[in-house]
Image (cartoon, rainbow, N blue to C red; front, side):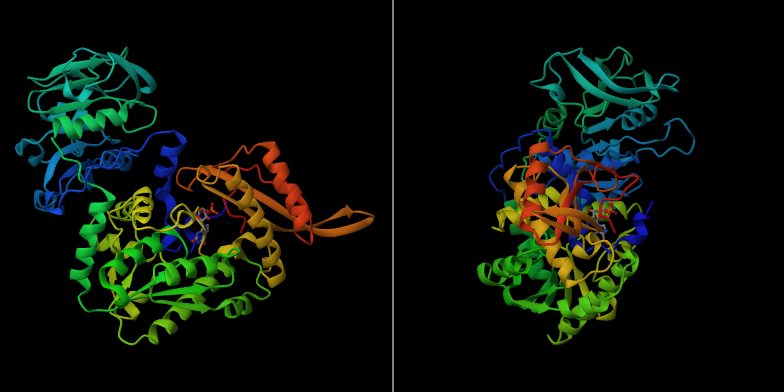
Length: 555
Ligand code: XMP
């Protein structure tokens, strides 16, 4: 199995790991909450999620943001001095793998209770509250994992406003509550958990189940009730407010300085550039490098959007020759990646040098990258993030400061902001496309002829998938030029031509993936069109392998 960490040279747009939320939302047919009227940015309010290490912590933050309330996820030991500027309106204590009664278990810091703000503890978070406020937990002899029915004991708990007396929830815990702390009422139970929800009059709640996962269908209503009915939030986290606030921030940060930004054609760099352009106009120069490994019409479309429609300052560099020259005779996937990454930085540096004095480098870093690398300090976080990017070594070498306006956004929020900024849909909804481009979808040597074949086949795949309205649901769908040639027959002639593989997968985070069960007639149409329309291809196969053991890309 390929090592994920080592073989990737991601670009800003490749930090797609977070797309799972947006796509998951679509798959489960959830309606987006309508956007409330924009409020002045000074009224910023935050729900702070205290992270005890659950695999679902990020999902809690997403759910709250879906309610149009700003939310940040912070490590459990974050001091109050860092929390206070966020203007917190309430806390959510996440789940986590520890047992609250163990001597070295992470617990809530005193401010969580001292500030008299509402608190919602989920799973381990509930056990923390129980342990710290004088209740009793029984060590889990009986683990509970999976669906359960929750029965409410009361009709007037604000957390459950407009919910039926019983509903399905998702459980995943070992320890359970034996006695609630003094002054807490048992608000709901399941067959296995007599105290499945508890609460007191101060707005401190404990939930044994996970409202953040899709298997708790009413989860969104519970979060809405918590933020609006318990924490009295106004709901001013909207694309419009984000854009207005950040344009001002960018103006302030950059002043009269000059900014450069590498465009890739994907949503992250597109939104980053557009936002910065709104703030500082032509003091932003975008560099768009055509490495010769892009898909059909991609360079034209990117230029059309940024240069002609948005009237940005774009330096277009057709470096196809250089890249293809260096890739001549190279067949090893890792070497391909390495060459492409290296060449990209060289071209970028050369172009940037022509611009004279530049002060900032804009990057499309997203919140999940920040969270994933930030269980410790900011410094550590940004150090790790830089290595994710193609332009990674540049800021230090060129003495550039970083500007990362999307640093607090999830992928689907980036798409929404892109939409609100007027970017075309094919850019805001683009499936992830790897930095090394088509080079890692051609098995063996990358040549002009092979690239042309793959472009033509890929165009058909994309076209048919879009016509079938599956493009947004699928994590990725594309064609691969396998290194195989096989015998075929066309009319009276025997042919010996390439085999194209179709890859279409569902995924939540690209770390694991399932091959998509595309309808046979769609596969049939794609196959017919490829063998009829693409010269030098006489066979089409469908890749029905999951990741693991296969990777998404073939190279
Ligand atoms: P694999 O093939 O590792 O792909 O299952 C996981 C996700 O990462 C993308 N990918 C890359 N993106 N540079 C990139 O920018 C790379 O070298 C690279 N390799 C894979 C792939 O498209 C999928 O979304």
